[in-house]
Each structure stands twice: as structure tokens, then as C-alpha cells.
View 1 (cartoon, rainbow over the protein chains, first blue to last red):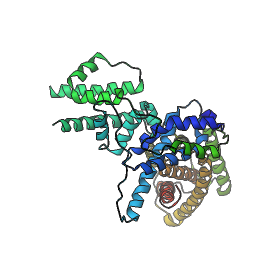
View 2 (cartoon, one colour):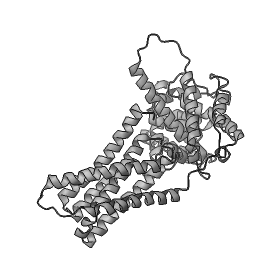
View 3 (spheres, helix red, strand yellow):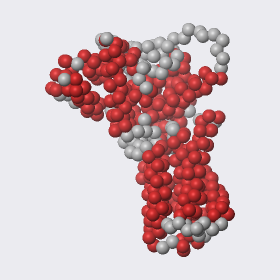
View 4 (cartoon, one colour):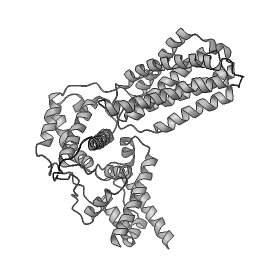
Length: 170
Length: 274
């Protein structure tokens, strides 16, 4: 990140290559199409690029990146809603969805599918914990929240997922 | 039996918190026993902590050249940037802006209000205004730097500021029969909003060095900063130090500034580029 701030081209390549899969995974989990997810990723990187001077060395990189990604996602959602109210659809072309499950382990796809039914704030916390591999404190940093609030959201999400798994069994 | 099962499931939650804090932590014996018995907890736990996440760089089903395009765009404008100064330096800069603005405004409006206050009131209001400024400076700097740990949410800070102002005034000042309540009030309100507008611009210039993500929260915080500097100046300049006047007219400057900041930010997000 420091090399990126210095303007090193190799650092840009490395960062984009290393962080984009996680970002793409995080950004695409809102029922957006493949094209929209790609646009969100590009938008997110442009924002990261414009804000790169706000990163400071001893701080962790992931919360900084995901704080920006989170707002890119929220703004994308707001834009989508505004567009939905303004535009009149004349046709509904079949579009590839971006949020298809990709876990390979047994049961992984099932839980991932249920994640979509959680409220947005809880889903976001689980996605950051699971997909980005962040700690509770890092998620708190990325969501401009406190660790206690993140724990509370995560516990509600676990309870919700358990209920859904139980219902599914029955 | 059911209560015990629920308690054990809650124990899994706290174990998950522990493991998300330290990814190398080993599952306890109690957790392993419960996972053997509870199917939902087992599946949840496995998915959250054991199932691999697909972070394969290959962007299937996305465009194969997606990452390359992004890299090219970023590389075209890659130039060295200077990182923001440390939190402490930003805080000092904020206080310098706040005090400089207040001093300039007081130089224009005078200190008639200061002469009306006794030592207790001076000290009490000074503490409230200083604490309010300290809280707002923390909040503003946290918002300027993405990924900062917000120890207090913006809403809480604004509520504490409002409650502190209300309680501080109510306990320090007495109620007098209103004399020219409206005429004197309008003057303070007009002057307060005028100062608030100018202060909001100055604080915006300070805040735009960072990266604003939550524009609504930033608008409300900038409004609160501007409102607080106006209230500080009015407290020193206004000779009508009675409770009714302070709560209604000076309070209106503070609350009006927060609402204006929020409204402005909302309009900017709705119709602007943000």
C-alpha cells in the first residue's frame, strides 16, 4: 500500500490482483448482474485510487479497502433503486446473475444461499467475516461501527441462519 | 433441556467471536461436544470457519480482462501522493481552525456576554463547549479516514452534544421574564446562522482532505461543528444570558445547523455527483 502511495506501477498490479477477487465477491452479493458487479468493482477501485492518500501505514489495509467497498456497494444500490423508479422496462433480457454460490464444501452452497435472506446489515457483517477473512475489529472499522455492535449483528445473523437451516430441514 | 440447548448454541456464538478475533485459536472441548450434537451449529460453524472461500484470481463468470482494465486505468494516473498526517496532527489542525474562526468572529462581535457571566457559568459553559468540540473533532477525523475505529457513533455524539447544551444551560442559567424576546432572538438567530454558514465552509475545506464515505453523517457533523462554533461565539457576545433566550435562539442555531448540514448532504447525494 505504501508502494502504491509512492506511485509504483507494480504495486498497483499486485494490489488489484490480490484484492479484486474478495472485493468482487463482496460487491456481487446483492443480487446484481455480472455487468453491474464489474462496474461496481471498477468504481470501487477508482474510489480507492482517489482516496489512497488517506491510508496510513500502521493501520490494517483490509478495513480501509472494505470501508470504501461498502460505500461503493451502498451507492450502487441507491443508484439502482433510483434507476428502477425512473426507467420503464420494455423487455427483461435474461441476465447472468453474479451471486451464484461457489463454495465447494458440503453444505457451503446451502448456507451461502440462505445468507441472501438475512437483513443487509447482518449479511454485510457475515460477508466481511467470511469472504474477506476479517476480524471483528476490522469489520467494525470497515463499517464505521463498534466491536460490540458488530458482535450483536453477527449473533443475530447466526441465530437467523440456524432458524433457516432448521426450517429447511423440517 | 431446550434452554440448555439454546445456551449451548449461544456459547457457539461467543466461540465464533473468539475465533474471528484470533483465526489460529483452537476450538474448545465444550464446543466440539456441542457441534457433535447440534446439526445447525455444526453446519454453520463449518461454513463460517472451515469451508474454503473462493478467492481464485480467475474472475469467472466475469470478463477475463477485467482486472487488466482496472490496472490500466489506475496506472494511467499513478503518481506519488502524500499520506494524511497522523490523527493527533489532524486534531490539532481542527482545534486551530475552530479557535481561529471563533477568535475572528469574537473580534467582530465583542464580548458583552462574557461580562454578564459569573465564574461558575463561564467555567460550566466552557467545559460543555470544550467537550462538545473534542467529541466533534474525534468524529470528524474518524470520518475523514476510511477504516477508522469509530468508538462513538455519530448519532450518539450529536445526542450527547444536544443534551449537554440543554442540561448545561438549564442548570447554569435562570429563567427571566422575556423582554423583546423575538426582536433579540431574531438578531442572534440571524448572526448565528451567518457565522454557521461561513464556519461550515471552513470545516468543509478541512474535511475534504480526507475521504468522505458517509456523506449524510459528514454533513451532520460539519453542521454540528459550525453550529457549535457559532454558539460559542454567541455565548461570548450575546448580553441576553437568560435561559429562555439561550435555549430557544442559541439552541436553534445549533440544531438548525445540524439539520441544514444533513439536508445539504442529502441534496448533494440526491442531485449532485456524490
